[in-house]
Length: 299
Image (cartoon, rainbow, N blue to C red; front, side, top):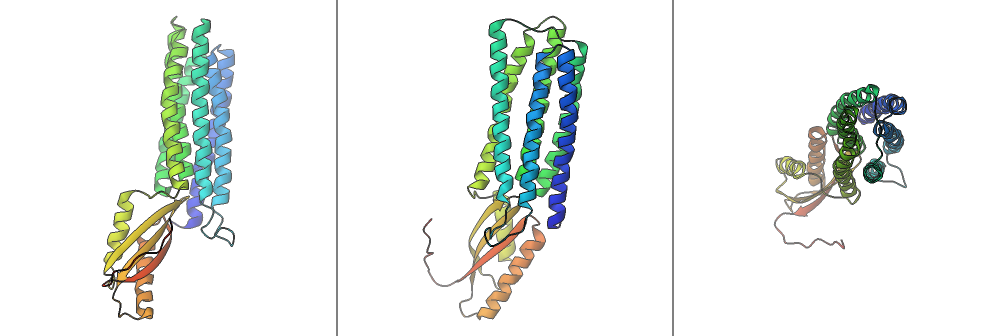
């Protein structure tokens, strides 16, 4: 998949979620207000916050798709991880707001008597958000985009929230009015977990954490299979947005000419690019395979 195609597809999936979220927001605010459901109205306010998060993600994608330049020799992909951090913080704040409101409602002991339209709005939100989650998660996994995956988790959070909202509103509709705030409070803890996982992943990438072991092992195996490479001395990888930057240290015959070793290194890089579409750059250092040597590093 070409670079422009990757970013165009990521932008499309977020725009679909943004417009769907806007429609759901209007529906839930109206259903919550006219259907006398505080929970559904709060769900609509939450959708408004989600729309702001998606807009920030679109901005991050616009920044991230810029090619490398003199000031950013490794590209602008980290903008996606920054956006993912912001989305995760918004998810955590949403969970805190829901929990606070639920506790306050129970302590006050004053509950609304919701109408059927509020129950229907919650049901439609569940179906829409679960569909958006699966679609966005599939595309985000394919692209390896931290920003898109963060938005997918946000959709998942909304689906879980709406399940609790529907259970609570339905129970309140049939007379058990305390069920609304109790269900909302329980949902807040699920939201905290989703927000934490999203934050943890994005922070790991911002700190140049190693990608999954399978990718590292596969790149190592491919490099060692190239004729002229005796051994992969060391491999380090880090993520920059949708791409992975790879540092390889290859052991080769010390009697080999510079030209020959360069040809082999170029072949390794070519095969890595052909086999792993998520790799954005490969930097290769060559060592003599039969001599002990100490790597100079301050990290």
